[in-house]
Length: 474
Image (cartoon, rainbow, N blue to C red; front, side, top):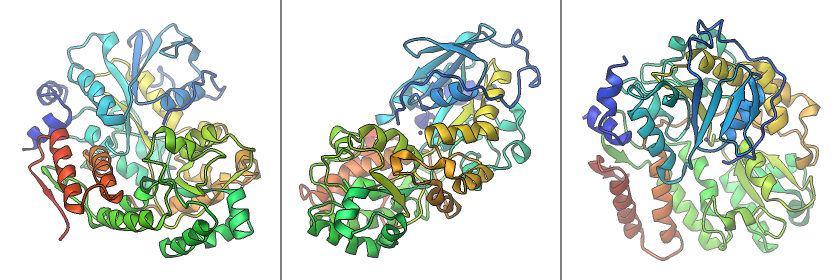
């Protein structure tokens, strides 16, 4: 049954047999290379440029990974105008292959490439690929062997990655506890709110005072009533609150080796609470969901939406680009519940012909503390280094003009310390997308509860034909 699930998950019947023989948002383009030093070099990795390939293929679902690698890897000399290739100082080429994450498009394209990995010409082999936290376990599976272990690449997690947050290392490990991925970011979430609305409704925009009004969900309900009385919405839509519930799941959507989806009670709690909030008028009815035009408009100065629940990347890549008002109009405070949202993991493809440069890039991006500090300063990422983030929380130079001079790390860092990740599965992205889609009609009163469940089951079986059963809490 394991092989059947693997075959369906990777959308290719060839993967198990072919590989058996070998033993995260869109950011703006940034091609400026920082002058920081990469943690390692190809000679130290035991692979000279002459021994390795001439093309490094990097697969990702947006240009965030490209932007970060370009910023920290000094061997990049230039990037083409269309952003599809970068040239290294030694003449080799990085080819950036980017496909959208939505509806599994990126995974399908990556799976197709991985299925041909062992027979592909050297310059066509996948070298590095990105995976979001919602499906990274699909690629770290030891039985699939799609990603090299970090140790086989020459990276020692115990020493090279000692400063990383433990929950990120757990997520990056296979079922045997062996790390097959690394990430430069951790994604603890906070509540991001409009200062002008806070002043009008509560008489203060001070993060400490606002934090008292967002301390937990019971308190948030009373706060939502205050906002409603003044003509404002607490959040844009029910999807905004989802991650605070899903991070508290007690079981994975699908247990390892099984083909049964088990819907956790926390997910149904989200449905029930969202129905209450929607009926009460705490969400903006004009916003149909996330990642669309009306959601982006809800972040503009014309919006009546008070707050969003976001990690650091959400402020930099979503709120800031969609805000058209005065700088300093937003602030952050504690969320009603600790949560993590997202995280882009970097993996070395089994069969790469460029292990030396792959090692260098992973170390430069996810282990070099100078680089991680620079990424936090330049992109406002919450980076995956405990000592760096502790220092940032105590350093006024990390204050953000966009947040009115507030240092957001004073809230992000304590939030990260409290994160306990829910069990993950390779089915998370699809289950989350289809559940939110199916129950949105119920929340709007367009279908009844049982019909929403039926629609979810239908959508899941279409996306994952190998699923044999869907179980709901009693």
